[in-house]
Image (cartoon, rainbow, N blue to C red; front, top):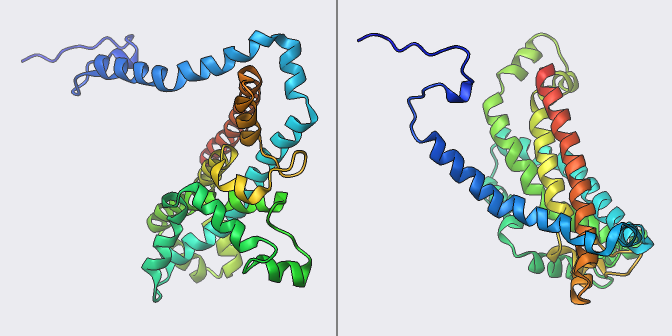
Length: 284
């Protein structure tokens, strides 16, 4: 049997493959993504223009909207940064050490996944209120008020984002093993040097991925935030809540306008994180 010559000028995706069904699977993929993602996003982008550019601009530049967007994105970024630090520590402990109750701790990491967001918000509010188990000592000893402030928003966004960082780093740490750290130690590297020059560079792409997932999850969070935020306009009101308020007022164009701004800002920030991740991978 003679070999079949494949012209090298053909595009790679048109070359014969041992795996059948490319056309059908590609068509299904494009249809599914269009129906589930592209069409709703297109409707979101088109809806605000019924009020014109001036109406759109007046909505997104309103001081209340700007503050809500600042709190949502700023709180999500701060929460993701906190989770990067402490999530890496949690993942390190779960992978590198054995201790009593390890399985319980590992299961608790997934609690924000399993717990309904409204229940999480109520629990956080009860804990960090003025008379709560944690809120009262913080207020009495440090004068620190958590519930019904922007700090409470950041706390809730940190709570729901932790599993993304831990679960992203765990398999990478398992694959990395302890051999590279032991090799660095035999070459005279200190623990800090090993961490800075061996461990962190190897984990950087995964750290960025976990941070991006935690940030994306936190930006649109609603249920766990509204109970602890207090929802005071200009103080602790988040953008998703403002969208719900406008929908209740039948201001669908205004709600869509805020959604478009959130979509654009999220896309820019996630694109920047992905570019940074690609740069880090190429550098390695």
